[in-house]
Image 1 (cartoon, each protein chain N blue to C red):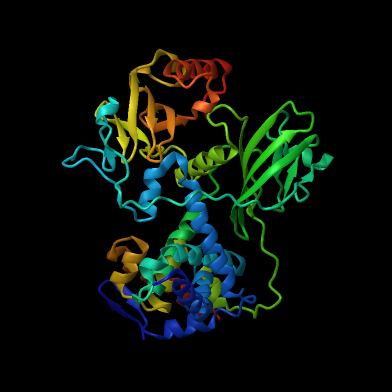
Image 2 (tube, each protein chain N blue to C red):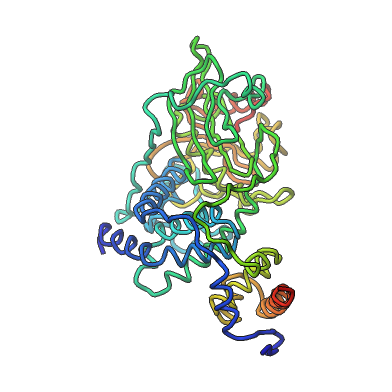
Length: 162
Length: 320
């Protein structure tokens, strides 16, 4: 396949899947701006890998795994060799004008520890199997199960209190 | 109804529906063309980062096949032992190897107008005699008064992360500085800067090597070992071993001129030829090779390189 054909296929894929993919990013990080960054990072890496990934039916899985890993990278990122300014506290993103109010369930999801949240997203929203979730997250299947149970228990508590 | 299966508590597909309804809608998405442009830029940056200092790595990225010595199964995958004698130099790219594209540098602006002069309020981010350019909290760049931006290269341009390579000169012509500046929206900024002539004579070569270092180090947690960079040459079982496509031309083990850089017994000074024919000098230690462009030496000889090592150590600047 020529480069322009590759790129046409890439654009077609992005157009068809970017809404869904950004929702995954949002579910993982809980902030639309971070989700946009995560999506851009992931789709940029996908472009680099596109000749290998294109047409194999694994595009979504590839992007999803990049998102999970990229988000972990995001937390590692503040380390720098040389720093000339003081570290400033995290600044909250400005409110989104177009955002419809999200639910208490979503807030509860974001309050979960990171790995619990990712497990819940992969297992119970995207409905991946335990084995698939373990593979994407790089953890043991037993760990997926325990995170899943604890995460759902926490969400159930929130729903019960509503 | 909740069930427990194989140690995992679950309540079936209803969670999927509830979570799916919990999101709300986000801001409008950009056009796919934006991702396409970002992807193309990433490919160009890969070429840039992998440039002169690590042609072997470029070969991997581009799927090229490089010639290796047959039967070499020693420790140090990807490395090929070289005899310093030029007569045994066989590690050149095979005739079928795809030559990496010439590294591209993208000027972000034609002039320095977009890098405004620092105001008094900005001086707090500009250390006294340190960098002549600095990123501010808002993701913009400022330059020290009296300095001109000769060249600005965008290396990373995300909504929350940006990185630039900047070539600056003092307006009175007495100094030049190269800088790699990064900004994150969480308030973290960083800048690496150097004067020309420590390792490289050309800005493009410096930014390639410094950017490659940034990429190599960025996932290293404090306290963790820095990964070995074996893209040029490295120690394997006490011997200096060159990467695929790199030829060792001269090796000086345990150079006393490198004493300030670490244990002499664990260092070597080398002259080598990269796959594209470029000759470089290098200081090899347990973390890999720090290459030095012969153009910064007073002569393209091992003796001059050793003098450079010693003088850079004496000045306190070192090579990096």
